[in-house]
Length: 243
Image (cartoon, rainbow, N blue to C red):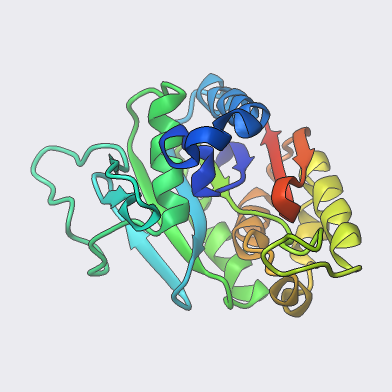
């Protein structure tokens, strides 16, 4: 049973050690993410699942204790997704040895925000994953009787300006505005209806994780609140709480 969700962007630049001199530019996003994560804790969940985009297709499970790092971004900073239960091997799972960047950012954020020790796991969602499979995955996460919280990582379009990673695409502003409305209203149907081809063309890495959230939150009766909607460097970043 899903009792709360937090939606956060996942640029490694959110981590001060990675953004270095640009760190102040992410102060607002970082503060909003902390607020959203702490709202998860206030919902008194019994279990947390972190969902984020991954490069590989399909889905990849990451058990508690899975390591990650920011070495690929020039920073010798290691993180871990929670801690494994006693007797469990953090390296077990689907064979992946490290968290994808989105989940590494989530692991850092959970520690930075002081999230309480709870059973935690990660789910890396391949960006090409079809909406139907995303929705089914989300429904599966919420099918148990325990109190589930989701931390959903993902960015909007990367085409909001000429300096954006995907250059300027006139469709990007409308896409991001619709995403912000859906996330702020906890509108599962609007998220489920997002066009995966358009999201791919606009390099919106949050589409698949948001649709996993939509599948988990159907009939949960949650209320949304949008905490952040901005586009530094031409990339759409959103922070929202569903409680």
